[in-house]
Length: 63
Image 1 (cartoon, rainbow, N blue to C red):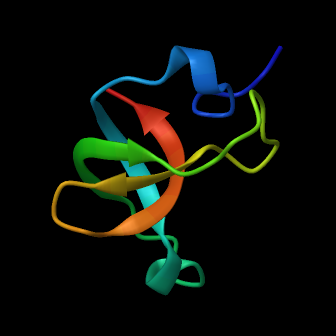
Image 2 (image 1 turned 60 degrees about the horizontal axis):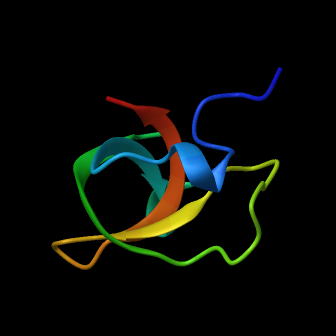
């Protein structure tokens, strides 16, 4: 079973992600997805997205 946020076909508009600048702190940022940045269908660390406010990170939780 794949974790939430690792499959491209199951992404949603609103999600929680770990932003590139917050990798060590573990802080999750929530927002509305503007663009999918990962080309592959599945990624073990999470699909990379850009939020509407320009923050880039990997999806960790789908709301």
